[in-house]
Image (cartoon, rainbow, N blue to C red; front, side, top):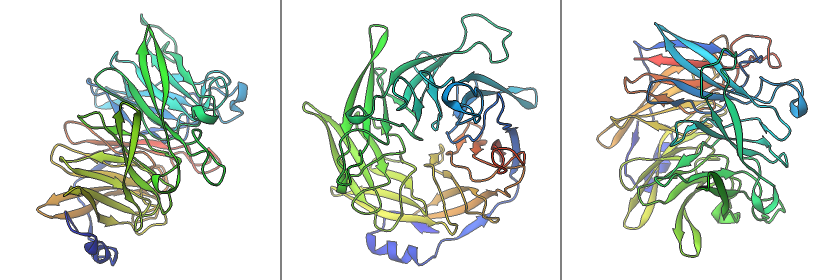
Length: 411
């Protein structure tokens, strides 16, 4: 168990290992789809997205179209899972084409204000530095295997100061329809001559989109090379993490001013290593997140952000993704190499007063169930959990590691 709202002195006690992780009974784990590296895709990293009708949407970073500059592995796909009776129907919606189309979607999709799907790819676009795309359904029904969905590139990153190579963070929209995301590279050069990454903004304009390189990370104590996206508060501030800084990464806040976006470093990580997963907003003045070996809380008190570790992972790699919170305040996440078999796990943190109890909901075996989930958990209104494992499933494919699975845990 971990304690909430304590001081930094408590962190050292937590790090000594007084957490309790409990297995749970009564959960049902089901594989909804096993990727084959064919038209369905392969190696899903992005978090699944639920629409208002309960359909699931996601991306696979490889598979699908194998021509152009996608080599034999494929450029990746966008897919849909819809309820059919007591099961789920998997449909690949779009296969990326590479070259001037998008290539290699690492992040999941976001349902935009118009109901279509928006996302980013690591490569592709005019300069092969990554792209922002919009995948839309056909105006009329079609008999096409891929459903007739089409893709439009909203923006192609040009590298350099413009930004390059969006990674695992999904896009986020504000109330005016502007969208925000991050690129791992581009922006300004860090002290080691590598580019430090950007936060970008795309605004609807005249039937298209206008892009601004809203903020270039400077490196050092303000962080560099964000691989996760940002979250938006009610005042229009953006929050996120970078895995690199003067220490082991930084949690940051970006506020809009008349002069542009201004960064505030909320915490420089000393105890958790590499916060790849980004953050979520809890109650007012509280932020939750993950590093590769911890779940943590940042709580605002008298103008200072206090850092507490809520759970420490025992595996080589814990969470690559961030957390998800349900309506009761429980936190859910995934680990890559933790769990009973060392093949990853799905976990839950339950608050009780000032304490948190950690429960392991499922430990992956590395077989047909999957291996190393790097996507966050998606929770529906009934408390069912959904996610993707980046490997495992059908053995022999994708270099022998398996091409990944989509799974569900029902209470």
